[in-house]
Length: 498
Ligand code: ADP
Image 1 (tube, rainbow, N blue to C red):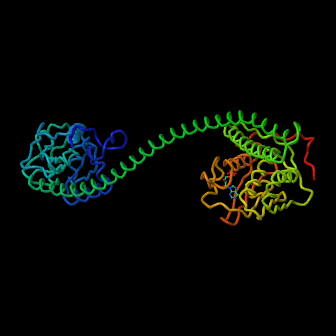
Image 2: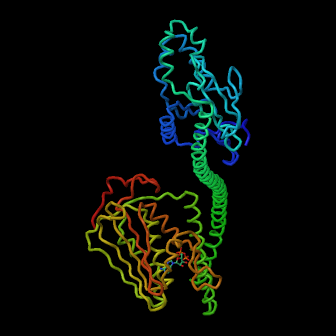
Image 3: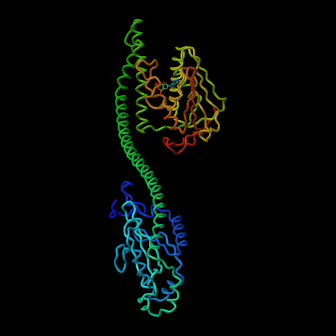
């Protein structure tokens, strides 16, 4: 690592790049409270001041030594204070080179670099130990002030300080701890050992923490990239879905007109409007009508779905008699049910049921779709039950409403398919050889129309035993929300009892 890299202290852009390439800092590696306590106890042990500064000269720990009242006494004079401050600043910012009276001590400093002895203008002394760690200059330790062993008198420069009582200063300097250079160096070697142990432990946990952070940031960056990719794909999917809906809508619309003509002309033929048909011809014409009607239903479903997906469906709400509506839906599936020999049972609430607000045609289609499925997926001889509940509070909706249930004894739906069958074009059996016809749109239309009424549709089922589709609807659709706008019917068509 090189010393000219930007400082690693603090967070933010300074921390860009891998943690292994980052310049280390004392602030990052040491816990300030623990480190402060350690330095305090070393200061107490040696009875000499120890100050630890980082590479910017910021104090990380400062243990005051016991130099009696000498320094305080010198500081009490303005000139003494100013010279003391100048020296303090120099120790904070440097020198780490032997200048301005500082001298390199023999030998190598325990944490790299040179030990420097810095004289004080009073005659006292400091020793500065640089702190190098893995090639980075992290800061320095300043030991002192102490009285050098060879000190016999305060320095001559102290005598130049105006207003200072020199005799008192001479007396006080005798209380300042006296140290030989050798002893000061040994003390610093001890401090270096403690500092090295703390730095090693601090570096380990710092790197672990940083690597963990980096791994998390990397994961977050990956997730963000994936998210962006997903939203691009989503956008494209939405666009293709829109194109698909619009294509299906156009094609269905174009097919419906000629198909209606085919069915219409077949009906005219079957009714003998253009002359009598022999039994075989009649059979052919009926088949054309039947297949034509199946195709027309399919096309209508596709058209409905494309309208729903394009958000073009507006529900026309009015007061509706649900009993009547269910009965009418039943008539449209009765022939198929009869052909398969199914028993269809209807359970309606007692009379006196108030009307509800709904889109008559759409709600009828909901019931027809559910009934048509029940009939389609129930083998011959089975049973279909239709139940319309009394009106009352509906827990799911939190408002008064009613339920329509269509239950069958048919093939049932595997548990993992129960959510998916409500998606458009989804069928449990979508193999080309599937037994049942259909396009997989009926339930998607049911869900969309029911939700448009502010209701919910759900299914319970057991494979091989049957299914029960439950539609819960509010008595009146909500005025706002995601569903289509609801305009209450005029006052003069207040609900009647039937
Ligand atoms: P379609 O009936 O045209 O295939 P739907 O959307 O109405 O489309 O139904 C989707 C699928 O849900 C069906 O293909 C079928 O697999 C399953 N399903 C719907 N209703 C029933 C039911 N009553 N019993 C068993 N399976 C059903």
